[in-house]
Image (cartoon, rainbow, N blue to C red; front, top):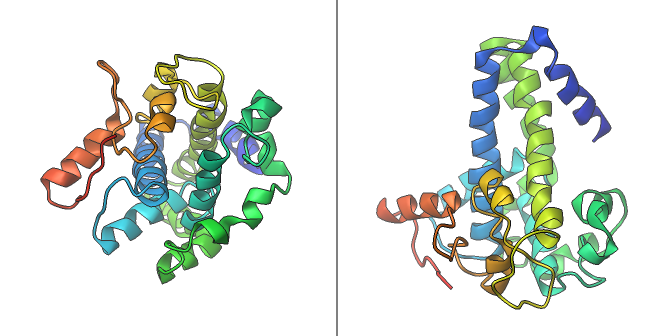
Length: 250
């Protein structure tokens, strides 16, 4: 984690800046944060909010694995425990233990939730590719790095891997920390979840977190008027292309 953040700082040195690097960052940010984490890991795999063909589920899981936030099985298993025990001691990123604990601190200790993943992911472990991704997800950065280097040298590598990972990490972690600290609570849920428009803007709609905790199986999280949920628009497109079925709302 320290190396990633140091290299993210190196990426911002003037000699590594280019419009190609900026484009690489934004494209891979969309691929990993939106298609991978929010649509794939979260709404598709963790909550079964909709269904897609197996090949497409594996594609979204691969995009999620490129985020280097665990593999699809471990990520989903931990997240399912977060919902079951939200903001209580068994919750791996319990907000009552402090902002920084829920944002990043919990990842530097052995939380019981990691040992309980198998209990909560029997459905996902039936897929051999998901099992492979869960074990080897970090290796995906190697072919990605080689591809970026061949296209545009170290500039694209630094912006496309360490800088992108640092940005994706902290933005997605805000859902654990900021949306359990600041925002509005239209639903009286038994946790600290809140709707935060700034986090929603950064996370393709994941910031409507109080809505999500009220209706965790809903593919649509921007439930109130004016709440933009870009991940939901992706799901709508998949539905129109007849690639998404059994789309759940509320």
